Image (cartoon, rainbow, N blue to C red; front, side):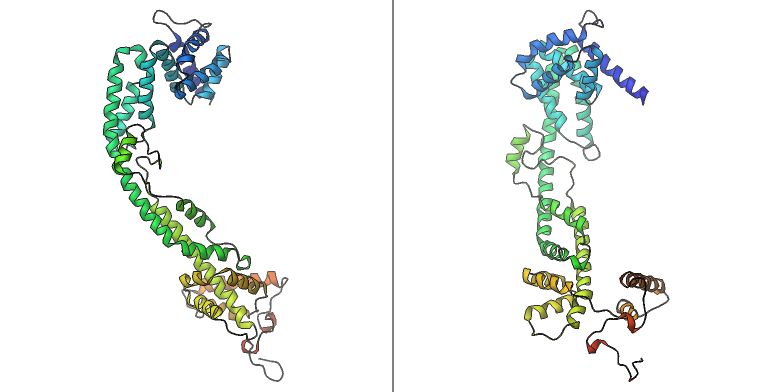
Length: 398
């Protein structure tokens, strides 16, 4: 770690001394910040009308304010992500001092080139040429060979002309996929509405599919870009990324991400529906007879038939309030064996381990609820309506 730090610090120091050296001789230990300060004084007015150039001047103002040299270089290391970025900025400042219009023109061309994204796996030629151009048009190269300015700008312009039609075509393809995703999202809204309403019923247990719901809502913010090809072509001539949606070459529509979220949401809704079937219906059947309501009849049919789309249609605020009140009432206790039989009516060699595990979970739950004691027979069941009780003989035996 210490060796890496020393090597990095040495690169920052080399960049400062190399950039501040004149053509005739290198600067002495005492001179680099003095030379840099003089250059900054001349460049400050030149860069006032350009945000990028002004930002570079401000950064170097902060550096020279931290004299001596070691402190100044520590400030540089905190402001520039790499010694190479620091080196290029120093030579940009020297070029700006010598030929402001030329330095600013190349800076804008390189800014476009740097901001464009061309992933090598999908666009190998664009990516290779982009990397080579960034090296060939560095400000150190311009400082040492000012006659190459025109070649640098023309070569970057050629690359931009190759990049722009590719970007426009891929942008259109991406937007079509996003439009299709938006239709899928719209079609799934009934599921979202239903599961979020059920998740607010605390008595049903832990909310289901919370992470998937969060991801779904993030994806629902996506929308297809409205920029047409002609408009976008004109805009991409000036900026490498669509100003409306920010699409970058290589971005993949989150089709798989949405499908994963929707599958998790569907499973979560089925989980909540299953909880309703177990907890709500058992309570309804244990209550005294009441006047029938069409909506309640429909609800029971939906729950029992696992009609999830129908469930969403009947879950209004009134029914949710009714369900909340119903879930607050004690659930009728059922004999442990009966409860096991509800989920496992038949035991085979293949399901034996699963059934044993389920019975163990039931017993552990009853131990918690019963203060550490469970009776397998009728003693563990609370009195229920006659239809739910087993017949007894005159002595109360089975």
